[in-house]
Length: 186
Image (cartoon, rainbow, N blue to C red; front, side, top):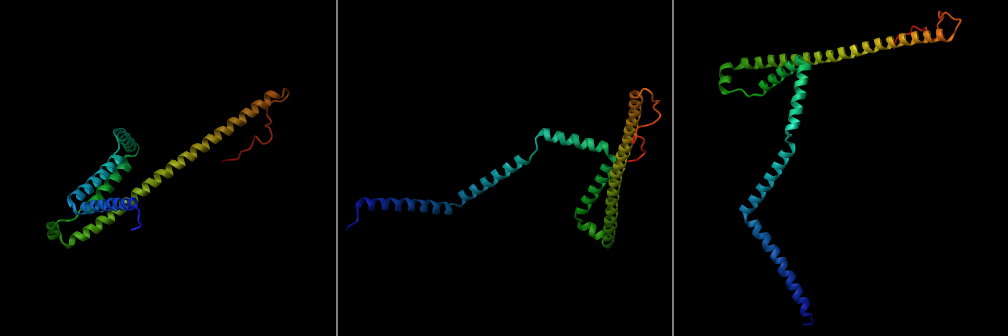
């Protein structure tokens, strides 16, 4: 009996606190409705937070609508081809009904294959049209650049000749400066 009574009391208090925590944990584990409610609340909060984070505000929706309308006005053919392709793919994804399977039977598979091939061809054609449009735009830009460069070169040569003729009093201006009469093309 050589132990200090205050130390024994402290150990007893610590053991009581630990037992209280253990009892609380066991009672929570046995209280299934409360745990289920906590889980549902947590999942609900997580979903509503995710939805509100990902839902665009009205300004963003209006901006995207204006952007889509502008794109449709700039390229109506591309929009039509894209719409047809999306509709086609949606039709392929819709499952067939039992009645369709009974009535159409084996012929449906042939039709599906033909439709897939046609859709693939339409998709490829759409890609080609888009590539041709991009190529045409690039060619137009290159041609405009060439024309601008030629104009700039001609203006520079003309101003150089005017400057040369105005700076030399005895010269008639018929002899261009060396290197300015070059006819190099870009």
